[in-house]
Length: 171
Image 1 (cartoon, helix red, strand yellow):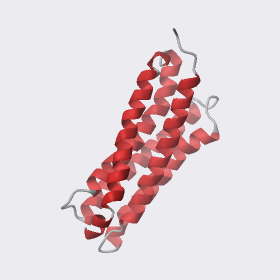
Image 2 (cartoon, helix red, strand yellow; image 1 turned 135 degrees about the vertical axis):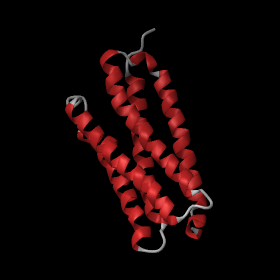
Image 3 (cartoon, one colour; image 1 turned 45 degrees about the vertical axis):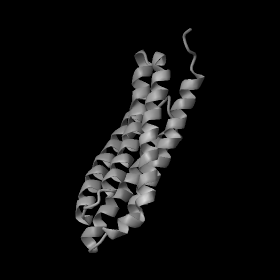
Image 4 (cartoon, one colour; image 1 turned 90 degrees about the vertical axis):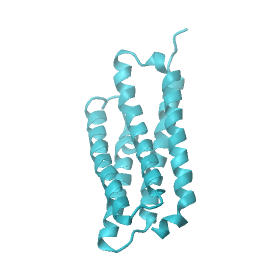
């Protein structure tokens, strides 16, 4: 997979960003832990968990892409599994926030917490087919997919942090 060598810095940078952002989500959740009681606990779980899942997917795809002796078929198999799980998870997130929290969410929430990540996972799924159709894989489709997931996660982390910041805190 000599083409992955050219993408080394990209995958290192994106994977590092995803790993760091997972940690920052935990910090934000810890700071706002007093808010997570009763009804708000379920609501925040519906929004924090998908963000962590998408950042983690980016991190794991980047880690696997950097395995030195990985074949294009092995990379396709791993990313294919991540893509299918991600699409399923994004669909369940869409259903959960649409059904349980329809009055508390907007179209933008549905777009960024479910639809945009589903698009990223769909592009990742399409990228897994390339080594089967061609004899090699181009990492550019994987890079686009993880970039979309990272972008959605950054937006969602900001939305969660902003929401926590405006909530009244107990003294």
